Structures are given as structure tokens and as C-alpha cells.
Image (cartoon, rainbow, N blue to C red; front, side, top):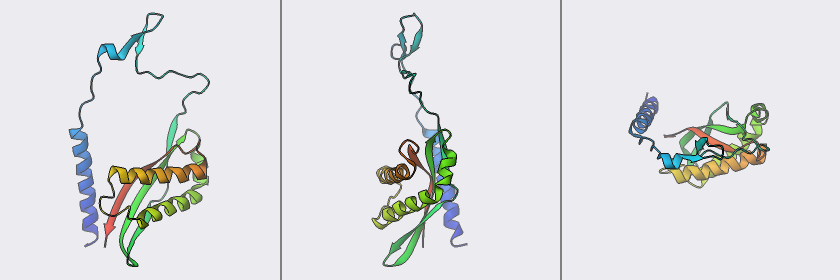
Amino acid sequence: MKKILPLVLLLIGSGAGVGAGIFLRPAPEEPSLVDTVEHAENGKAKPAHAPEKDPENPPAEMEYVKLNNQFVVPIVKDQIVVALVVMALSIEVPEGNKDGVFKREPKLRDSFLQVLFDHANVGGFDGAFTEANNLALLRTALRDVAQKDLGADVASDVLILEIARQDY
């Protein structure tokens, strides 16, 4: 019971934080008519912010591959495990590459764990470990090893879906 209560409180607090963030999110700004519309040569209007389409290189549709199991990273101080960090990760890949990621998942998990252990050993999970800059460094390192293992054309990003720390 002693170990379950912090997890329950963490889940409730996270849910309340997400709900407050959604509720207090600022409304999207309405762009002015001058900013959003420019006239094309044929007289039809098109959005000014619409990206130009390149017929030779159409943008690839992306899909997200959630890795099957969570990652558990021990936090060690003076040769004693003082906490565990649990994370769930997903990889952004071009559509149709999902099976290739699952075929290489053991190699990816090993590489990701090495990055996570290194991050833990330099104190990345201490203090305000969910700070934006701290997580950006971790995401970049994870993306770099994913691109090394899968190829830069396959792994475009790594997403941190869940992260929690349990202190002992």
C-alpha cells in the first residue's frame, strides 16, 4: 500500500495537470484576411501559409510505432538504487516502415537503454527531470541512436509518451 499510494497520486496529479492545461490553453488566433489569402494568377484565392507542393518529392505520411514494453531505468547513488524511472517511447517513421522497426526492436531497445543509463548516470533524472531542456537533450540523444540503428530516412523522431519516477 505504501508504494501504490504515490503511484495513484502521480496518476491523479498528471490527469489534473493535463486537464488544466487543456482547459487553460489560449484560443488560437484568428489570422486577418490580408494575411491568409493571396490571389493566384487564375483569380482563385489560396491560403498564404499553404506549403508549395513539390511533385517530385511528395511529403511522406508519418506513422508512430509504440515500442512494446516500457523502459525501466534505475537511479543509483552510492551503489544503491534510490529510484526507478519508467518510460514509454514511440518512434515516428514514414508510413509503411512499422514492420522494419519491430524487426529491429531488440537492437533499438539496447541502444535506447544505453542512452537512458548514460542520461541517468550524469544526473539527467535528478531534480526537475521533466524540464523542457532536459527532455530535449534526452529526445535528441534517443533520435540520434534510432537514426543510427534504423537509418535517418526511417526514424525521423522519438517521442516520450510517458515518464514517471518512483523514489525509494
